[in-house]
Length: 113
Image (cartoon, rainbow, N blue to C red; front, top):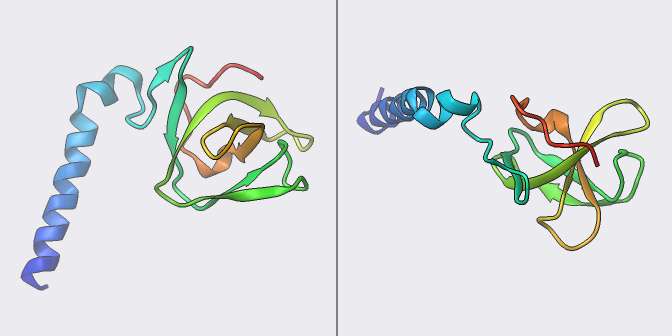
């Protein structure tokens, strides 16, 4: 293993340990969730997440949130298939929805839309 690869692996392990031991992670059970009733919740996509005009994958596709990209979730809605969708407004004004399956599960889900 090269010196660079070894250092990168040690650094990544250190970051993972720091995130696990963080007081914020322990307080709310989810290091990527920052909740506020007026500001929504900021979540990070762990996979590429398509953005739709309505809470259904058959609606118009508006864009994509890249893996590792963050969105602000305002509320959640149940789609026709019964899956949970998050309403976001980070891309442009108006209704935009992402499927919750592209994001880590939440200890405190957002309110219903």
